[in-house]
Length: 418
View 1 (cartoon, rainbow, N blue to C red):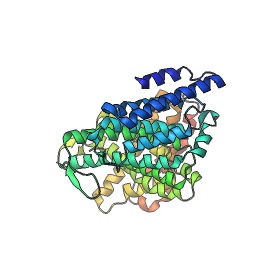
View 2 (view 1 turned 60 degrees about the vertical axis):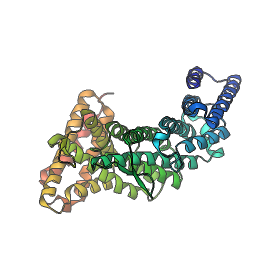
View 3 (view 1 turned 45 degrees about the vertical axis):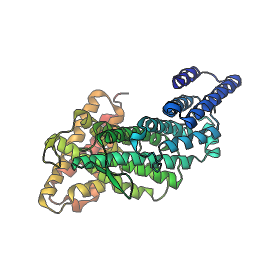
View 4 (view 1 turned 90 degrees about the vertical axis):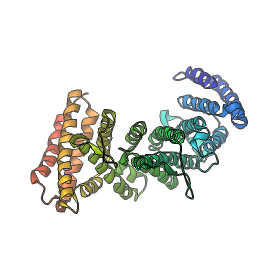
């Protein structure tokens, strides 16, 4: 339909020299297309709004690859309001089964719209124009709030199904039992929201955000982390895309510190425990099977294990010494001997796991992975040296192994895969 026409038409101009005449013609085409789509969205004859949203998503996505300003700020503001209304968390059409396709396409459209508004690549001036003429922060905050709601509902469904209950909180004031069709629709929207967050967060992280926008993005990251915490309960497709979304974000404290003073301490209290959770899953996936609440056993699938390993390595590479100290405290500091023994086993597992990752990266010539492993060893070695009280009863050789390996991995990674 019109969405494919938009994609195919503007794809011709990607990477080609842009003359004034061509830009003027493309602007007219964009204007006419948007007029048509807006009319369909406002009339919604025979459910046409869903396809109109899909077509707009296609248009924004392909226009983002062209540095010229083809879509006027006023047009983008207008469509942002229409998209947000379609998936507004407070709308009367909240239920996913009212029109799941419409909400799915609205989520998709919002992700491409925000990537257009915040994309500052190729040295173009489009980013500056949009930031000056559009309240991009408000659009980002409202989008993050809506997407977070969809992901949180997916987590809530997973928790309720794990507890053999189909009840889920739709609002703060009421509960009702959802049908299988409704639960399936919300899971699909959760998947779409995670994918949208992956695109949005990886784009806006390179831009200095105001406090409201920053907090909204951090809330999204925390919601994505909830998917990981509930990994053994989550729908596999949603869990996979949530972990992929987290891997698309630079979670390092140093980056956050550069943007705003005081934000680094907030991050340590979140990233450290999540690394501990991922470590716990990775440990259980190799040593035992994950216990379900009903007493049954269920292993993580091979795909989930691979994604989990990739996420764990990404977070270890992003974490600062303060994050690693929180990780050590949560892993090793326990009130009973059994838990403490498990924490020591996990620390030994982490050392051997990193060595295995290093060995595979050396064989495959993956330089960036080796750099991540090196940083993880460096950070963990410093954290171990900074927390002597936590190491009581732990074989001192383990600490020495972390420190020694951090020192010797440097020359081994130089020149690999380049």
